[in-house]
Each structure stands twice: as C-alpha cells, then as structure tokens.
Length: 118
Image 1 (tube, helix red, strand yellow):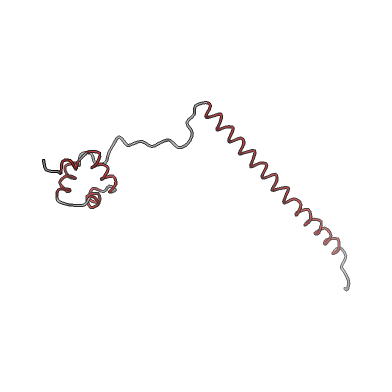
Image 2 (cartoon, one colour):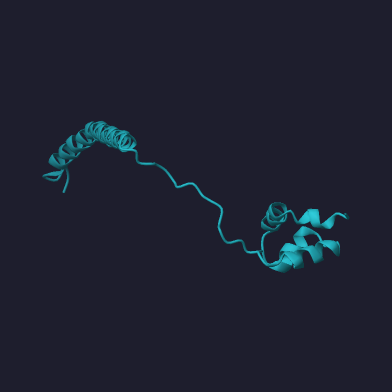
C-alpha cells in the first residue's frame, strides 16, 4: 500500500479545524469566566452593603476575656513558689498553664504586691 490511505487527509483536515476552534474558544472561555467572576464579586459587594444598612455586624466576633480563670484558688501556691525564687516559666509548667497565662494572672491579681516587704 503506497500513497495516502483513504480518509487520512480528511482526518488531518478535521484535526486542523478542531485545533483552530480550540484556539479561538480559549479566549472566549476566559472572557466568560472573568465576566462571571465580576458578577459574583458585584453581588457579594451589594449583599454586604445591604447587610451593613440593616445594622448587621459583619466579620468574626470579637473575643472577650473568659469569666473563668484557670488559676483562681491557686494564689497561695503561686505566691509560695515565687517566694522560693522559682521562675514564672517553671511555676507555669508546674501548674500546667502557659507562662503568659500565669504572668497575666499575677499582674491582674496584683500578686507581686504581696511579695514586696511592707
């Protein structure tokens, strides 16, 4: 069999047309995607404006201090360990709390005032 088998030329011409069509459809698809993205953005902005007008507080709720503190009732232990010269880090480890939690508790409860001689 020499020469071009029947149908090969037709297949190649169809492939050529299909690849041209694919090249022209890529920009069209990206354009429609961009338009859709802009529409979604616009709808979102309008919804946020509407919610603000209704007085709805948007975003993550602000945190607040816990009414329960892990170290309440441990003041005497903390004072005793501070008087013995232990660091706040070691005391915090012993009490199984973070050192910053201990430092804030000492500050808020004014436990260091109890350490100074009167």
